[in-house]
Image (cartoon, rainbow, N blue to C red):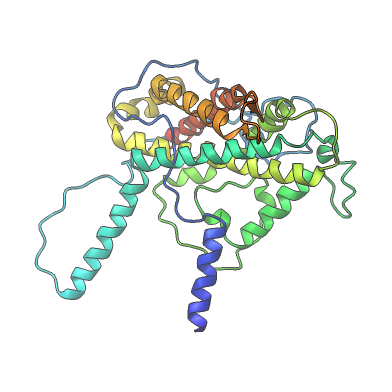
Length: 358
């Protein structure tokens, strides 16, 4: 009974934090030929890598200066998870057959994580999470006291209310093993606590360099400096706690979606290693950005996001004769993807690929 209870507890924890190994998510995924390149994203300037990976400082109330991160450099090495034709083997005993079966399941799980279908499916679910988060946050005013370090009045804490909520939540989630998952990235990694519960053992299909890529500082600045002021009404309605809560959930959703670019990059590399290897060896970030850009796929993402924002955001009233009202402007959700989510995802991909042959 004790063992069953413990297993159930661990299973519940894993479900609560969505810690199952994620089907990596990218969006622009066709693995055949690269489409015409869209407007290239300016990659980070030299010397700013450390600043980009630092946790956010006190929340700015005006548009922040864009932080940058220097792309990681790469050297040659064989690709991970290469597919090798099985060699002929002698007949195995029953125990050997069981081991072979387990290995086969593990290999199947690895390959499933990097399929176009699983990645695209995950990205579509992330679209739902992000759009619903924007809809929920839009019901409250801006509430500037949420972001003012001098207004939080939290004893023993020097920072804003939203910083307090994100930091404390990350500490608690870290104790439960959330950030052992390769698809989870904290905003304040220096404040995490050690795991107290045995966490799930994840089959990591990424290159080890992936662990050092974290652009949450950029995501933080984009959300608070560009997106939020246009999403909500000015002024205060007193709902600072609710505002901070939804800010945190949106930040986590954006971070997970954008950092799924690592899985996109790995899937694309494995699909066409000969195409990407020369650019990686030459440290050619522009060429990698060109190879990673698929205009048709990005157009499809914009259209889908527009449709979801219009559908999910309708105000449904008893009087169906009235003109349809929307909670947010659908164009804002499209702009979020067009200007920030897709470019930042590709930036993560470039950083990853530059270290892929290390």
